Every structure is written in C-alpha cells, then in structure tokens.
Image (cartoon, rainbow, N blue to C red):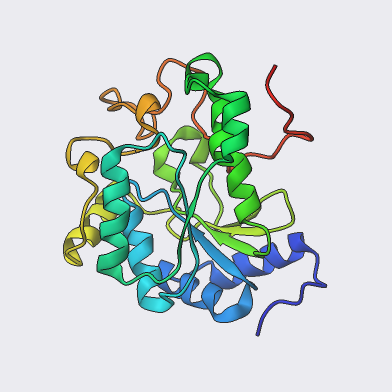
Length: 243
C-alpha cells in the first residue's frame, strides 16, 4: 500500500528507512516502484556505474521515467552511451532534459560561464531544468554512493530533497568493486571513459581523471572548492540571473 501523503514527509522517510533497512537494492527498488512512494522517477547521468541502477530498474519496471540531464556540454561518448544503454536495457521512457535556450543566450551566450562561475553554470544548465522536470513526481531515485566522496560518506538510504519530495539512494553502500562485479556478471556495457580511468563523469570541460589516492569525484572541478553540481543541494531562495 502507498504511504498516505497526509503523513508528514519526515515521518514517511523515517518509515521507509526502517522498512527498507535490511533489504537488498533490488527489493528496495521493487517496493519503491510498486506505488508505495507515489509517482517515481529515476535520475541518471549515464556515467561510470549508472548502468547498475538502470539495469535493476529495467528488470523491475522498464517504463519508469528516466531523467537524463543533457547540459549540452557532455562528452560525445556519454551521449552515445546513453543511447546504447537505453537500447540494450529496453528502457521505455528516457526523458532528455536540456537547459532553456533563451536563458543560455542571456546568461551563457559564449559557453564560457563554467570558467568564470562553475556554480552558476551548473545551476543554469543542470539544476534549473532538472527541478522543472521533477515537477509532478513524489520520489526520485539516485545512484549516489558513500564511497564517492567524503561529503557522501554518511549518505542515508531515504532522505528529504528539501522541496517536498522523498529521495532514495539504493546503492549508497555499494563499493566500486561491487559495482564493477555486477556489471561484469550481467555483461552490461561500460561507459568508454570508465574504461579509461574516469570513475565520475560529468560535463567535458569540468571532468578529469582523479588524482591517484583521492576519492572518485576528485576529478570533477579539480582545484576548485566544488564537488557537487547542485541537484543534490538545497535550492537558493531565488535563482536570479547572474550579473
């Protein structure tokens, strides 16, 4: 039975964390996609290990909406991989989310905003269109994992996204080795850049191989005080235009 929306979100999240505490990722997903969590979307960057979660969902509910944010600055190999993965897995509702063209012409006409203000660039090209795409959904599924960075080391299973929705991280405690084994065991296609040593893949101008010995996301925005694009952070009160 779905959890009643009359139950405060904080209480619903507490119930779901207790209910799913000892379940496998597959069982958590099956229960989430059964209607218990309302209308659900999977959010995927089609990155290094995204295929694991995509495969699980494809086996449970292949018509689940998959929100793929195309910032228009992604690697060409990511775009090709997204198409291949969707075909191989039989996913039936891939929704490519792009930034607003008019906003790009006003706020990043030369495509160099990422150099001057990477946070503003992420907000324009990723955060704003993503939250518009989330309208109408009650819950979203993410592929975040605790091993990826120190900021994610205490990642919970279920959490409040800060905008009235529940968010679930079913692979939160999976290691890179376990993810790799799953991909191999199920003979799943790998992202070409993952094969070349990129454990975390975002936009082309801001993604590099991580420094040996540092966490998986250290190759994202290296040298800057930034390790999140912003879709997992609280939205500012107003998203006004950059000056």
